[in-house]
Image (cartoon, rainbow, N blue to C red; front, side):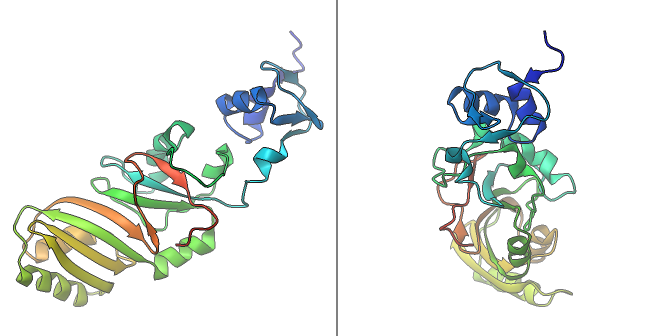
Length: 241
């Protein structure tokens, strides 16, 4: 074996172009070039320092930064400092939704320098936005509406809805843009902007309600829609948040 060379797929992973398994698929389909020439043989070997690029077919659909959405299941804590480590098992290629119509090819670097502008607690489910666009992350934190569905043990009364709104309005730090409405006997819809941490449990308790489930269904103009639980997709260039 030539010890001065290494497998092309391993080298591509070292360069951060993609994972080794993704590299094999790209090589096999003729979308990898070494020093300007297509290499489509699995197991091909290269020397460090050779120029490895993806063909235009792959590169032309790669934006400078990507934004993706995840339908977070319960049991994944995306409210702590290690949220990306928690979410990483859900963000692989095998978890990409078949409904993804963005045309963006998944690359390993798409998980680098990601921002989580609206955290979601371990017990909660629903829409999470991850973005490499710092300006978008800041806008979501400051300006975007967040919409939730809350399920409770008790039958919801108009008085409890009123108490929810009053509690939100007269907190030490009032919840911005807060609106609450009864969706069914045991379901409440809440819309607000930029909530502080741990507000849901406090709010329900103050209104005499016991939460059983929480689901976020919208951030700004971006709705969760039919995205499957535990799946993710890219946000396309035509979508607005």
